[in-house]
Length: 162
Image (cartoon, rainbow, N blue to C red):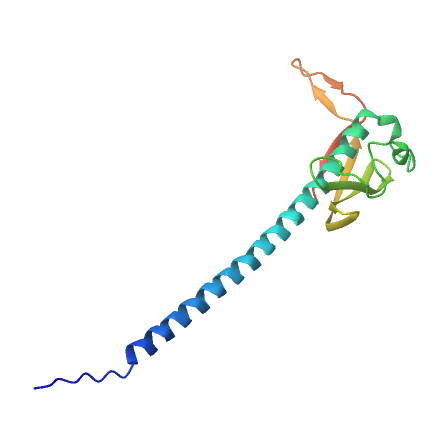
């Protein structure tokens, strides 16, 4: 008695379909991870630009504390090399973050500082961010132990977050 096996190739077709589906899933995962990597890189640049803008604002605050005679002078800060008025050609610190001061506007005992930051890549600024800081120049009194008020130094700066 002879036994005949009839093979239709059904298992081969099913396994090829499963292999095709797995290949498509793998390609999709690789493409998706590349997109996510670009999105994370972009977010990193935006954060670095914001940090650079904040660093510029802090630099201005420190400069105004060190130079109280400059309070109210709209042009004197532009002459200081440590306070760049336009985007620099080389990074202020690190690999690519740069900051520059858009302006310092004085009105009475209040100064509004606008600092910008970005990432310098091949002579172009990308991922720009801006920070606005309001600063007050005020007289501060300090109470002594005996209850007598003594005036502190003129020109103490307080930061107002906006």
